[in-house]
Amino acid sequence: MKPEWSLLPLSLFLAVSVAQEDAELSKEELAATLFGVEASDIADSPLPGVYEVAVGPDVGYITSDGRYLFQGDLYDLSTNENVTETRRERRRVNVLAGVDVADMIIFSPEPEDVKYTVTIFTDIDCGYCRQFHSEIAKVNELGIEVRYLFYPRTGPDTDSWSKAEKVWCSGVDARNGALTLAKLGGPIPDQTCDNSLVNDHYELGELVGVRGTPSVFSASGVRLGGYLPPDELLQRLEQESSE
Image 1: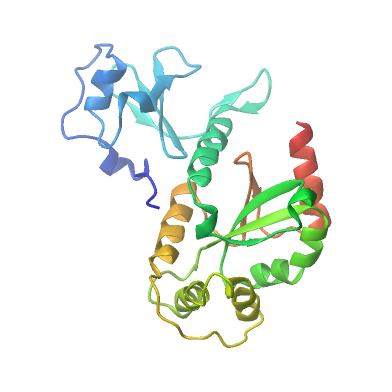
Image 2 (image 1 turned 30 degrees about the horizontal axis):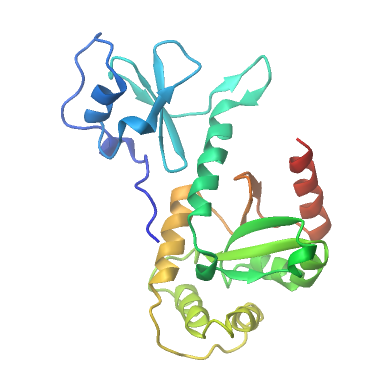
């Protein structure tokens, strides 16, 4: 599972050659001037003379002559909709849906009792991550399935990263217990396996814009925020569902 190339930083995004000034270009011609972008990544935007460029969950805008590229949130003031964030949410759904459930650590109620599913980037040593996990039974009782992905905030070659690798290497039948034990500060069996999945999760977190942990996403790609008590998490999911 390797994430798609990110739109950022812009300095890497621009090709050496730029489009001819003031000439309106087709999507195919524009794609040829942008590194890592296909014509299918370019779409019309609500702004005349401006295209939307989306790679993974990242969304930017480029003028039709290929001269100006910019990023930022575009709002429709008639509806107060953040048009850019809506697009990001749709893109995140595709990115997160590409993760095999076998590559996650899942805490779930019985299948018939699942009402909502959330994907959470977690750090074993993060205080709020530990607080949330201490309430995982209550979260499940409310009908919420939690799909964990690793995001050790301190990065590679650190103690938190090593703990995540050990949890993953504890084996498919022991990972849930190992994660719970690790979040309680307990010892983790030191076993060897292909632990590259921790790096894959971390890169995926970077791609979807994780900046802190826990980072909670709904099944529809909405970023719900960080730590939420079980009842508040349910309320947020119900509100989103009704909208």
